[in-house]
Image 1 (cartoon, rainbow, N blue to C red):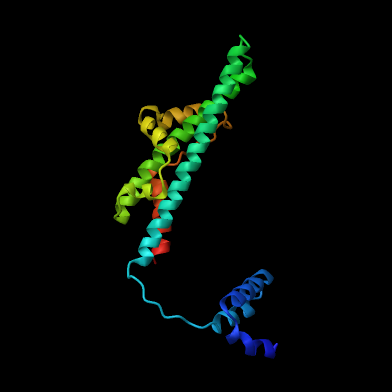
Image 2 (cartoon, rainbow, N blue to C red):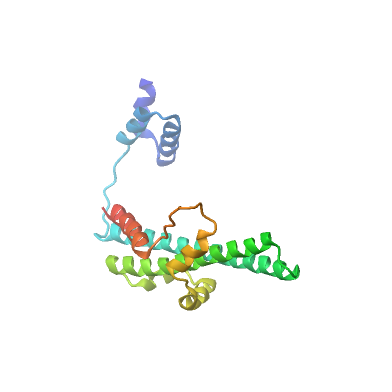
Length: 198
């Protein structure tokens, strides 16, 4: 072991990272500490605002991912709703199961619309607190599907009570339904920003 320890200072970046990852996989904290302690140090000059820029970028990327994920869920639920509705209509007298499927997918679509609207508002809140324009999200590329959906969202967002009423059919008796709000979502994103910006 002493011979290997004498070579720690000669490891190049690739060798050190490989050894470090192997030590982490083994759970060898002592080896991890040795590898880190013997690594050459670099002195770098960087902009004083770099950490804040990285934090803004990470939060915005997370927001974009959540928006696109929710959009995919919305479009999926709308497709399933159309399928269930068409099957119910094709049967003439719709069966209770198909009718229930249609109601379930309608509830899911409503939840997605609600969540998209809350995500939009939360982003505006956090962008303002971070001191960036909400349009910063556009730096991640244009998503026409998201743009078109958001444009029609204002006219189609159900109220929180309407969403809860739809969901109540599928919940256990006495179960309380809590919907995400823009404030709770914004608080989580702000916490992420604060942790990354420290």
